[in-house]
Length: 249
Image (cartoon, rainbow, N blue to C red; front, side, top):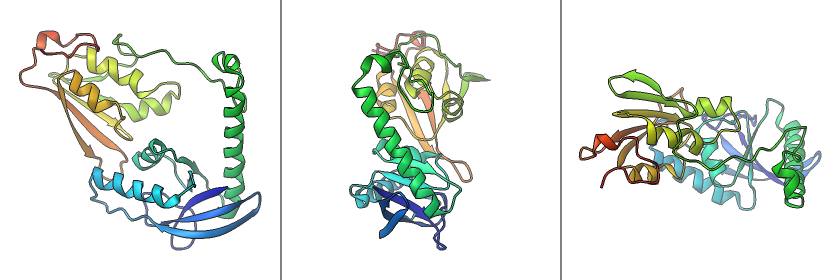
């Protein structure tokens, strides 16, 4: 197995938000060897496109490696790695002690996935998974009332911390949380805090005749803020139209 460990100048695991580089390891159990270093430099004022490009370049350099290990696993950087098919693991152990743990975890995930593939019925009823965790089949997203309402700041301004809500409820996904809010909340402006912008988000915003401005949060905060506003020519009487409609003709 190949694992890309993010290390500092002392060769210790660190966060992607700190200075360091990826050190690529190959091996199994307690036998690991270094097969290369991959630079990963991100300036504090990097734009979102620059961040994405840097991460995509790193993933390309990983080759067949689809696992990263660091001292942290939260925030936009990690979320975007996940979007690109790279799993993130965190550990407070010494690097060489952590590698076997990650390998074991990845093999357990692969085994659980294989069991699910050969026993669909068991998965749908929550019968598969590891360490007693149940897998729950989520329902399709509709324009129903929001599962978790946005915070009303007054004067038509609302705020929703998607990152916090997803952290509290692992069974919730971004579509379930945001689509009802976008479709049903009578906002003038809506601030959404998230680790990363969901892939479907900008298309749905356009379908609802809304605009969205995305900015990267200033350190020490992680993630991005999406500020959603209504287009000037949008008929406000149709603010609660179903999500399947465009919102304005």
